[in-house]
Image 1 (cartoon, rainbow, N blue to C red):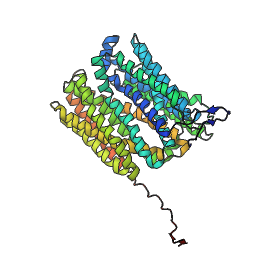
Image 2 (image 1 turned 135 degrees about the vertical axis):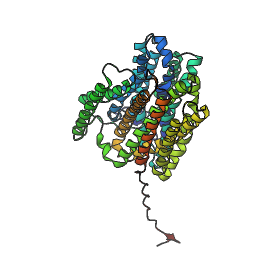
Image 3 (image 1 turned 30 degrees about the horizontal axis):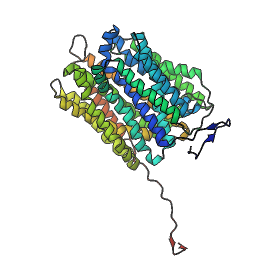
Amino acid sequence: MSETAGPTSDHTGHRTAMPSSPGLIIGVMVVAAFVMILNETIVSIALPHLAEEMDVDTTTVQWLISGFLVTMAVVIPTTGFLLERFTPRQVFLVALSSFAGGTLLSAVALGFPALLIGRMVQACGTAVMIPLVMTSVMKLVPANRRGAMMGTISIVIGVAPAIGPTVGGAVLAVLGWRWMFWLVLILAVLLLGFGIARLHVPSETRPVPLDLLSVGLSAVGFAGFVYGLSSIGQGGGILPPWASIGIGVVGLVVFAWRQRRLQAQDRPLLDLRTLNHPRYRLALILSLFLFMALLGAGAILLPIYLQNVLGHGTLVAGLALLPGGLTMAAVARPVGSLYDRGGARPLVIPGAVGMTAALATFALLGAGAPLAAVIGAHMLLMCSLGMMMTPLMTDALGALPDDLYSHGSALLATLQQVAGALGSAVFVTVAALASLHPAGTPDAAGLRIAFFVAAGIGVVAIGVALMFKRPEPAPVEPVAIVDGGRQG
């Protein structure tokens, strides 16, 4: 997929625009992805305000987050098919248009149902963007520079949700909740206009048929599982959490069986042959622990601890998370460059140790902890996660052949969402059950146990990190010696 010096012709004979530079392509996609992922958590700090504004209870308003996650879990598995069947430009423009439309609907929503639908339409666009960016990097960037470029993407995946509550708290305090959507909409429209005018991506597509049965099984499996996990601790949903999880597991088993059969015909919706590659499989497993810590402990437990136990307001709690997000942003690209030179092992092992130490520190801080100590532990957590995120994404996709990049990135992004939902469900449930509060509201005692459970998962992550191998040295090409016109 090399760039051409001028306009090209497609297979129909129509002249197409000259491809944009790889830097411009990836830069626009990364900025769009940052805006979309930021939106995923920007609403979280406004949930109590929205519950009062929309006249709904706390359990119901939580679905502005859970519904977003469920929709992501349904759509992401289809991106492997979408990225093979359509050009990156087409996928980018449709994803950003969907996101902008959902943002507009949310901004003008007069009631909770319209706001929830707007969030779910937003999620449809967001779900496609991260696999699109990861696949584009693997196809457009040379292997020896992918780590540094993936470092930029890890800023999007890790930092955007981390600073979302900070941005949301500031906008809510100054402008009101609707401006959380109006400001995002302005950015989305600007990016969409720029993409239409300037984004031309060199690409090849193939007419892969869409298996509707796989789409249905994927929706039932991933949505049922994530919906069930999200229902835990929220009083349940349409079905009891155990029933939703059971339906989801059955759906996922049948979905996997269906993909195995379709692989023989080279037309799976989500190609599971990615799991046949040990490096990909190992990086995927460690990524699951990472996202349980990032979304379950860092984005859910820690704000509860800051507000319910330490008694800080939403704005202070949001601002307290900002240094950690900036720390991850600061280490992302240097870590990518270090990966390009030494591989994943020297980074993921200390990263897993630091993650475990930070989670254990939260458990030990207790009800009288100074805010500075919490911020310091959070910075250690985000630095450690940043040390692992870039190497894991790059190592996972670098282990795959070119034709599996889109499916590998789709599976990786899907299971990251599942891991986040699983971490949130497990940690919040443990905190509620271990709480001394009669209503089961997480208190200092419950959160201490939940953070210890998270640290225990971190210990398992250390064991997985130790299984990473050092990269094999590249073979040295023989060089002919020339001396005064005579070759030796």
